[in-house]
Each structure stands twice: as C-alpha cells, then as structure tokens.
Length: 78
Image: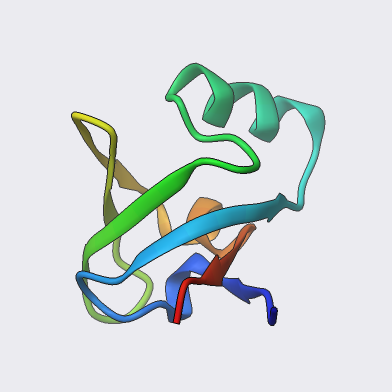
C-alpha cells in the first residue's frame, strides 16, 4: 500500500495511520490526542492553503495544524 500524508487525503475518507515522521515530541503529542500508528481515522475537512485538518478518531473530533498533519502518513483502505 502506498503511504501518503494526511494532508493529501480526500474529505470523508477513512484511512489507517501508517507512520508518523518527526521527533519524539510530536509523537508524544499525537499519542496524547489518541493518534498513533495502526489507528483508523477519518478526515473530515481541510481548510484552504495550509489551514487546519479536521479528523475523527473514535468518538473524538480533532483539528490538527497543517504542518502536524503533513507528518502523519496514512494508508487508504481503497
């Protein structure tokens, strides 16, 4: 399966987190938000031009900064 950044995923698409690039501090922050390798998330929206990316993970809805979302690589179920 091809890994792509979360920022390139289509709206309302369900994906699986494959890899988080970046330092331990970013991984720790995402882990505290419930985002880690292997979890399924759904991209809800992405605002134009480097805006936040909104995702749903379980029952939680989160808004991630564009830079943070670009470091989350996912695999599509399609």
